[in-house]
Amino acid sequence: MQFSTPLVPATLIKRYKRFLADCILENGDIVTAHCANTGAMTGLKDEGLRVWLEPNDDPKKKLNYSWKFVELANGHFAGIDTALTNRLVKEALLAKHIPTLAPYAHIRPEAKYGTGSRIDFLLTDDARPDCYVEVKNVTLTAPDGWAEFPDTVTERGTKHLNELTEMVRQGHRAVMLYLVQRTDCDKFRLAHALDPAYSAAYKTAIAAGVETLAYACDITPTDIKLANALPVKQN
Image (spheres, rainbow, N blue to C red):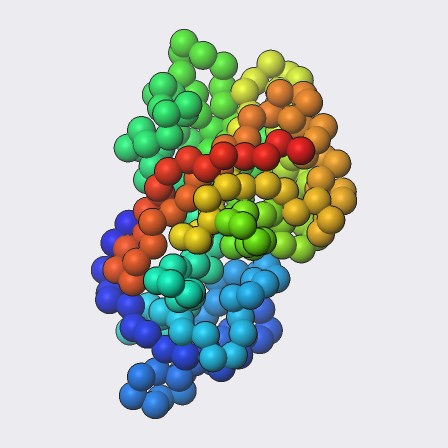
């Protein structure tokens, strides 16, 4: 996915009210950017970080900038825009870049299922069981290259795991796909201590047959795309 409008570098002043971030552009102007991330953003919202913003001149938008990336040490990047997550996965599904999901002929985003929920992607094919794919954005990191999820308590995430478990019990296939929007991680695991309820639901889901996938992203100031699969620690 290439950005139609070139991103511009800035320095983060602060993130506040969850959806807003004040930044200083290279010319010294202070602007407010939209932050499309409601998570804790641990380590990614500190004052002085170099960030990348997408400018726009859309009169329908309240803000003229959208915060996309944080520039990390040693040339690495972290993507903070959760709105990109499903777009990246859909792009990869259509291009058949996820081998275990490639055989499905039809991709239906935001299909209703469970108890008042919508699955991120329902994959169907006449030759195989329906496949329910839930996608989560990952930005939390731990030492030694681990990416972790969640970064805070997520009741909604726990509900999704329970509903995936029920889909498997009904004879369908279910996949939990963690998209790691960081270029400095090479493996994935759960942050069990941050949300014990999510951890318990995950263990139940895995025991029931819910599959786990984790994928890295290639990120530059010009584009972002799905990269390689990451090894997953299941416990």
